[in-house]
Length: 335
Image: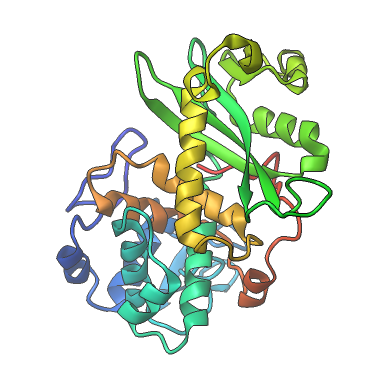
């Protein structure tokens, strides 16, 4: 299975289209490893050390480079790195993650797949969430395409204490494509440091908004310098003096913010820790941007493809969580 650059993946040919078909395609780990190899090396094996394409297949899912002698597993350096559980279980877990519209809980995954501990299911879900960010994702907008951008706060309920109003919340900047005459396109979002808002928003806009975009924001003076940094047309809407509520003036970003908060409330059960918020934003974005996909198998294919290009994350790293908003490369924005 080698996809051309211009060919869209086809159910039943490039990926299983249904749950029964998933099990027919992948009855054992050998079938899973062979499929992962086609995703990781679509044009044939490439040695991670010397770049040679000459190799012997020496065992299930393992190759040895003919030039440097390096032995490489198809799962090495991926989400599946050094997993002691079968690949067939991983494939089932990915299907469950993609099949449910709002996702699957760690407890649900533990029960369905028979894990001995809740921690295993929790760690697997977080490993898969890290694979939901596509490094080469397209920017939002473009020439004559409009995008709305605004910030919102998510997290625990407001504290009845003096001091900063949002002390127990996280600020998230959201950008959403507008579609005319109605509807929304793709979304990007990222957590930012409220005390360094301008820096966070400008980095986000630089990494997420395409040149030529018509960008709509509220009247916050912070946005006024964006056209000097980006090749965009900025339209500021001063909500206070407009005479209409914000959700009518900036409907796309307000609608997405509302959906995000509703989804997080169900995910976090109204008040659990938000130390892993960045990766929950990734999952929400992954689902929202593929909400019109009619085949769950296509989402599974996308996740599997990204899983073999995502670095492994040890459990200790997952448990620790990020200590501040994540900014990877130019920016860690979902999509």
